[in-house]
Length: 56
Image 1 (cartoon, helix red, strand yellow):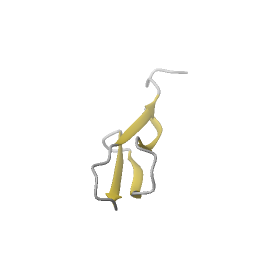
Image 2 (cartoon, one colour):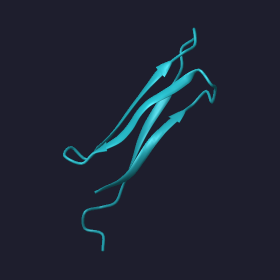
Image 3 (cartoon, helix red, strand yellow):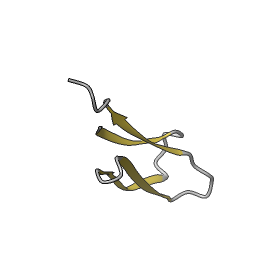
């Protein structure tokens, strides 16, 4: 079961501008989008936090 999520700017600079970060409960996924305002390549990572469906 999806409980949360987010994104990480691995280069930790101001060239990345986040445009969306939200759950999709129908597919149990987390969606992230970002805009690179710089000239160089950037690396971003999305993540989802889940718990097992059988957890108490």
